Length: 438
Ligand SMILES: *Cc1c(COP(=O)(O)O)cnc(C)c1O
Image (cartoon, rainbow, N blue to C red; front, side, top):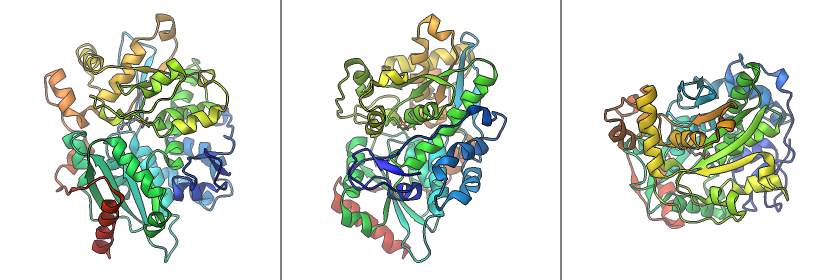
């Protein structure tokens, strides 16, 4: 398969090349030249997720240097459970897709682990290790750090917005070995993301550090995320209720785009709603047909505090001159007050505690018309509630235990380097890391 850039000014590349480079040299994002089709009848919801993933990704890997490793890559990446539960007796058609059972308790583990398995096999003997530069609004950085920690093939530099992530998130960004450098940047996520883009757009910087990106601009992350939508769609289809509609708590649009791709590949998925918080760029776009990126504002669902979603460019490129609503894609936005009341309400009625991001999706579902709610829906539960105790505990009035993998991380010391938001400061940080690792 050939991958092309959204900006059309970079040569087409193989999948491995797109995974290694992250951002295309013209500043665009890589997309499959044409999205392959798959017959859902060739897939079985009883298969483990890695096997569904391997079947789904096979056309992407055809002819690639990683083709023969695909099955092993998927086995090693998707080695933890995914759940589909119907937690609310008052909403029998609503299933929650639990994506938080991985090592850092958020859906980012799927993409980060898949990317890590691919990249480790792409470093050639004698080449310098990759440097994975990742801007994080909270969860990506931890997932990427965990996936690459201690690997000799790659170093990781995580940039996160100081004071804008939970204590537990911060810990899981910063508790790794020397192969991971954790940099706190002010004032917000968009600043981190802009700095990462600037580094990538600087050819000298890029080659000096053998940069690659683990943000959702990296095509491997998007591909990985298609697998669980495929699985959920197959489960619902076997119940004779296809197609399933999907609600995706959305920030940079990576997870939602994966659902769109799974649908376009032929899986029985109906509508796809991007549920956003008070960072309304995407919701406003669907309402006004104008895309107006803006500075992000802090909300209770901090991993979605994105004012300029990086994957928007992919979404519109794919639609071409068509209206996105023609693909069955829509959006809804949810205030902090509603996030809080949804967490409290779900806890009182069902005993379940949801993270604030998942709550955004649940509110979007509750707002559908009764007719719409008669159809099957899946809300992606993007993180474990225990990652956000500051938000969740006051609402439910009790403490929640950290998810087991997170509890294990809390014993490790953390190291953070505060950094000015400039390319010079980033270069100095990466040079120090290189000197340290030798
Ligand atoms: C990253 C993240 C999101 C947003 O996902 P995108 O792919 O950026 O749209 C939602 N919820 C949680 C918990 C996240 O970590």
